[in-house]
Length: 203
Image 1 (tube, helix red, strand yellow):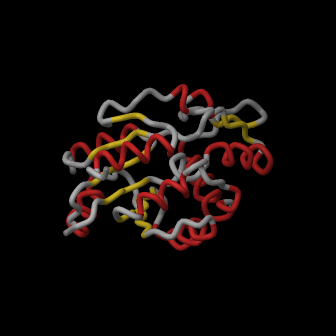
Image 2: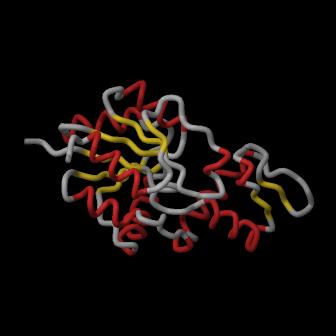
């Protein structure tokens, strides 16, 4: 009998990222990041008042993920939740960082006590989720992500997957509306664990 599958994002779901990215930008790059606004376009402002162009934002993120991942901290309850869910099913971390950072992410998660398969990706997650379904052939599958665009992508390419919208950063969650294509919005792991087990039909 096949096991159920959890396909889980990393940043702002398992690990805090934007708050640490904000701290690093301010301290090391003299850039203010107003992430609490929920508007990431034009949200990076240099100390002279100029907006950081979008073309420069991704290189800053790449630098952060390559050299500053040690700053990131676990979301409360995430490790305990995955430990419980692993008793009943399989877990894959699907994270939107470059393939070159795969090893960094694996080591980062392992150092925090999370030992799960990690799949890196660029862009929409719908096709990678479809590929994971074909690989694992799970009895049930749940996808967890903080971005509305990813729920839309998975709804398009793997509509049978149950989709949970989670924004675990407490300063960001209030300004992010529930994703239209998600089946539920839950921002804490204690509640989310029960919901996932229900979708897996585990009592």
